[in-house]
Image (cartoon, rainbow, N blue to C red; front, side, top):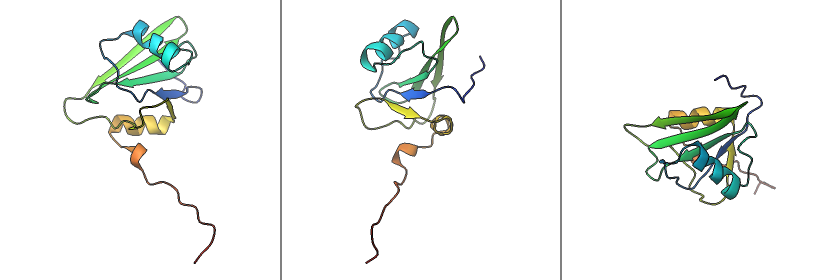
Length: 115
C-alpha cells in the first residue's frame, strides 16, 4: 500500500466505535453517519471507547484497506467533541499515532487593541 498523502483527506470519527466492525461495518458508518463516500480515497479513522485501539478504512482501486493499531500501554489522543467529523492533516495524523494531543493545543489569540 502506497498512499500519496498529497491527495488523501483524513477524517476522524469522534464517537467511540465498536472495534469488532470490519470494512463493511465501518463503511456503513462512513456512509450513513458521517455522510461521506467510503470509496472517495479518503482515510477514515475510528477509535474504541478506551482509546487503545485505532482502525483506519481506506479504499484503493478495487478494495478496502483495514488498518489497525492496538496500544499495549497508553491511549490515543482523541477529540472530546462527540459531534460531527473532524478532518486532520498528514502531520496531525503522525502526531496522533505518536500520542501527541493536538486537540488540546493552545489556540491562537486575536486582539483588536492594546490597553
